[in-house]
Image (cartoon, one colour):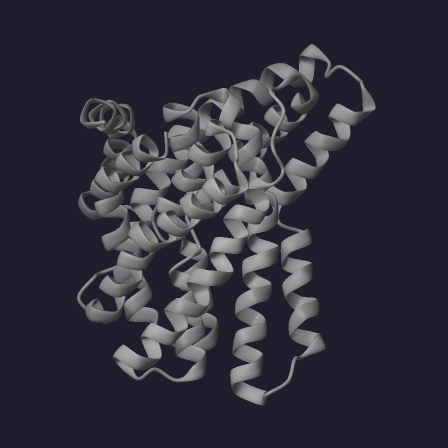
Amino acid sequence: MLAESLHHILLSAPLFLLIAVGYAAAKLAKWPPGAADFMSKFVFYIPLPALLFSTMSRFSALPPVDFRLLIAFFGSCIVVFFIGRLVSWKLFGLDGVSQSVFGVGCIFSNNVFLGIPLAKATLGEAALPSVSLIVAFNALILWTLVTVSVEWSLHGSLSLRGFAKMAKGVLTNPIVMAIAAGLAFDASGLALPAVLAAPIGMLAQSASPMALVVLGMGLAKFGFVAGWREGSAIAAFKLAVQPLVVWGLARLLGLPALETQVIVMLASIAVGFNVYLMANQFRKMEGAVASATVLSTLFAAVTTPVAIALAH
């Protein structure tokens, strides 16, 4: 087991070094103020959708996916979200909205910028369909969960306008659109013309390294001093508690080895940037979430490869 953990650490080490390159570039080079945001938007809208479209357009030719992984992964999200809310109330005395942000921080992974490159490097191409399924439903389910929780905390009822805004954001997300377009193209039975396949393939190959460098640049904007106590607790839930709950549900459902490793890996990676957007939107826990994002990314360099090995 130790040998396998070290093997996965070595496999993922270059990926975290790319994050360090992005962090150093943002800190040391004289980048314009909005450079990191521009690069993040570029990668999110072009190379990553190209990678996911390319993968899902060959979905029928790839190894079959056990769809029960959705039950195991999102079932764990619901369980850990409410445990996180309870702990944040009892331990830190947070109000309902802050509890909701704390809870979603415990379960919302950086699946796009970190999960996709990690899966490709450590588990191989066969893992990408499983990752894509999680990514496709992740924003919809978890934004819905936190929206319901916040609306209930504020008003004791649910707002149709809030749900409509959230649904529009999810459905126009370029990652979700690329996955849906790839599946539709695969179902059509058509072959992508070489004149289109070549540039899409080149963009797809650049997606993983560019996403990791951009992740590092984004982390350079955050500190981890403000709200460090709550941030440390969120990071601990994210890196340890959620992977354990996911693994338990996967075993209970009897998921195959690859699907189990994929969902444990996704559960064990760092807090996603979307959580900071949520904290900023609700004007709660911004410092704690920024702290959790930085800390969880640092520690995930070791804990995520170990989680992958233990899941195997």
